[in-house]
Length: 351
Ligand code: SAH
Image 1 (cartoon, rainbow, N blue to C red):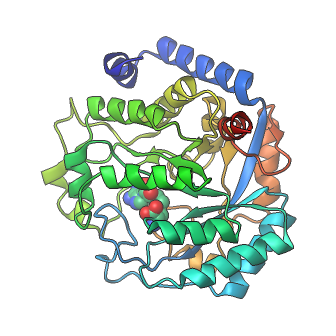
Image 2 (cartoon, helix red, strand yellow; image 1 turned 45 degrees about the horizontal axis):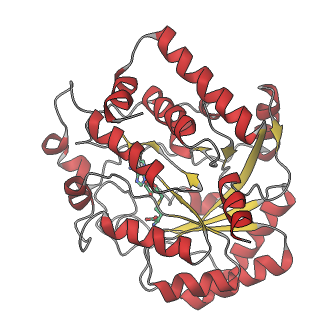
Image 3 (cartoon, rainbow, N blue to C red; image 1 turned 90 degrees about the vertical axis):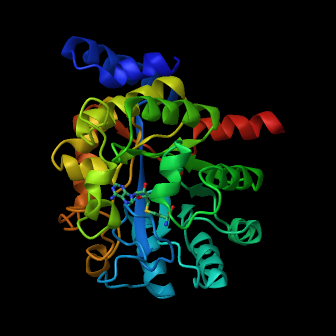
């Protein structure tokens, strides 16, 4: 599919045509990665951030955001909870805190690996190669770093503290791959200034990058960010601006599954925020094969406030509920780590 064809899908509103897209994505998913849904415990271990991304509610620019960092013991306890809940992976996510004790994080990684059989995914932003290497050697398996948009001008506006533009993200993704990480990236859908053609370029870039996993979700505003304060300067006219809605997110996920059949594709938290009741299920029926339940302790969860309305209440026994919801749509819970098929095939090809 080229930019024109992808753009046509993104602009498609005919229900019958869209049903065809959902069915195609679902069958590509089933043929390639099967019915298993893998669960990842998402632990937001700190909201301290040195970066100034203008869309993000925990950016250093958001002055009245109360900051927290979980202690080593708290992180270990949460990881144990993920293991006890039968999740194969814990995702350690945080702001990009330049004062982070990088050795402490390495020690935590080693301890989690010693105590559990969890795979560990990091989502902690941009770091020099030697730090990525330190964490890999400590036992980290995977890394998530979205490139957010492939439009270089927009990337620079969204990240006023970036050095050269989106190329620096691609460089980090390459670095992570070379270090042996299973690598994930993705974009925000419907961020102000994003045109249909630009989003189609993002999808093409996602395929080109040969990623192992792809995390994309709708942009959701946060009132106190610079982007929201200057919204009128960013929004394109309604003909051209990609809407940040649920259906657009499903279109993007379905197209990604069709173009990258063997990747892991989560139905993300932002999607579940737009549709609390059925967001996960709809994503899973339209190409996704991963769900990332939030396991951050509730007292911190409400402070990891990336955007407005982010699901912060802890449903009682969500661990049990989500498994039932997955079974209700005829899917099975994946056992084990749930490595990306794209990654395992690549590794097998190398030996
Ligand atoms: N500091 C890490 C983790 C950031 S949070 C990093 O920079 O990689 C993870 C993701 O949340 C980001 O990559 C971004 O795509 C998403 N995010 C941030 N603000 C958002 C918003 N307002 N709406 C939707 N997604 C958002």
